[in-house]
Image 1 (tube, helix red, strand yellow):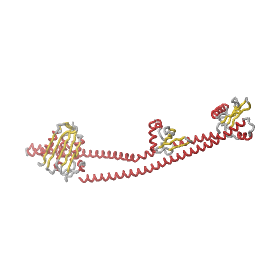
Image 2 (image 1 turned 135 degrees about the vertical axis):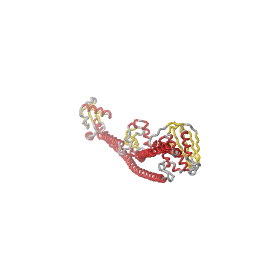
Image 3 (image 1 turned 90 degrees about the vertical axis):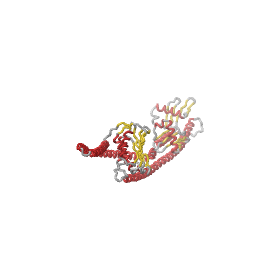
Image 4 (image 1 turned 60 degrees about the vertical axis):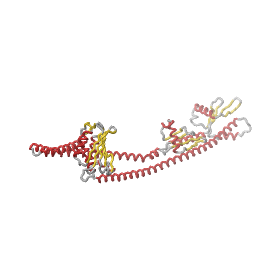
Length: 502
């Protein structure tokens, strides 16, 4: 029967090794896939960052180009203004035709002509909205006056008209176009396709101009925002942006949420698999233990039932012998054996049901059990009982003594019918401890747990159920513990029973 548990142990080792290999291979493969996906994700982020830098350079170049166009357009406006001023001057040496051509060629500069009292006489190059009513024209005059001083046109010393103007339509369109381009750039930064958390900051790296893929509550919380900025600086270098000449902004970004999640995916996967295996093992063990309990209960009840029938018959025969006065000595001996069988039957019946526990001083039934075993043990086996406590324990005497008998018989077999059995009863940390020490052949360390398994035995004719019953009685019925405390080959073994005080 020993070989069964050695085989079981070997199978456990093999299955554990296979399981570890599977887990390692799975972890390696998953990690490889995650690294591959992470690499692709990081490439996306890098491409996005590079595209942003290129787009920023393009916007900056566009701004410079627009500046040149604005400058050229401004020069045209200035030439038109100068021409208008010249026409209104009294100088004699003017090329009237040339100046008139400059003024009439104006198709872009918005102009409003008013008299000295502010009454609008004429206008040119205005938007339809600005010229649709007198009120809108008045507003446009105020708008022009706020930007540039009007040109005064003198007719004589007592009468003057005024010419109001502003930047040409082309300049305004360029400014609107650049603002749209700038807004499009910012929008593309914050709503990026790479799902990158991003901050668009001013030159001081403290004021948030825009943000994307970040919770707004983080932006509102100053401490959280500062922490986020610090993290982003450590993860990636800030991207310097110059959309307009002399105005610098910075883009800070960090790894995408997908990249962060992928980093922990293998560990989450292993954790889920581990939890599933643990739950499955627990359920399987519970089901197996329940099955074993049913087998134990059924076997115990059936054994008690089978013993009950011949016992009744034997008790009848004993009474018959007594009545007939056939052999009184034989009747007495038979009665002892019948009582012994009754005790065994009672034990089996209690194994098959919930036994009744009573509070009593443990040393009393223990001493009675040892006395009983001592009279039935080889003469070369010496019993020693060391008692250091009078404490009470909730126990079933019949079942507890059965445990002692099983331990004594195993110890006598281990000592080959010759040696010393020591029982040491004492208290430790509010527990009642009983150490049973023999001077037998000892146990291998690998067998310390196996000896309590059903069927484990080193005897040629043993069933391997004694210690299994002992463990069940102590741990399940008395809520205690029984285990091998120590053992050395050829020196002996010590079993320890730990019980709760009543």
